[in-house]
Image (cartoon, rainbow, N blue to C red; front, side):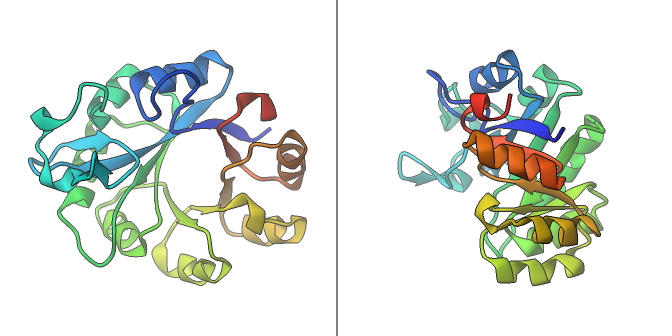
Length: 209
């Protein structure tokens, strides 16, 4: 059976990407969750999806300016040790503000065999790999992006679920572990599991359990 992960936790009556959302995912029987990470101006890694908060770039804010519901990544790692977590590092190529180094240092303090880092940004993945962060996953929504994967040293690929066929899964599994996002249909989840996908991300736990 593939790993079953809640998308940004599970935003069922609570805010996404919060400690409450992560607890909800586990309470409803999922194996873990995925979350999104940005770095603040004062160098703190925080969990939030968008690059902005109320129209203001998170990278321009310091931690004390964020609302209490935005957790630090460290708080999540402390609250959920040894839970399956996919950390998506939000980044826009080609610039970097040192978030890769900050993430590498933090993960070294909280080692876990059930955590891996992914990104849409290939340059961020290259930087993370050079810093010794493993495992890594390459997120993509366009099929041609997969041509970059062999250059990135990744262990996982994370395609949009609509890109996957049985033949494509078989081809990918020859080299990578495969996570499909975002799978909210029970029959589609069953097909992907039968084809050998390693992890499924969902907004609807009933589709996977």
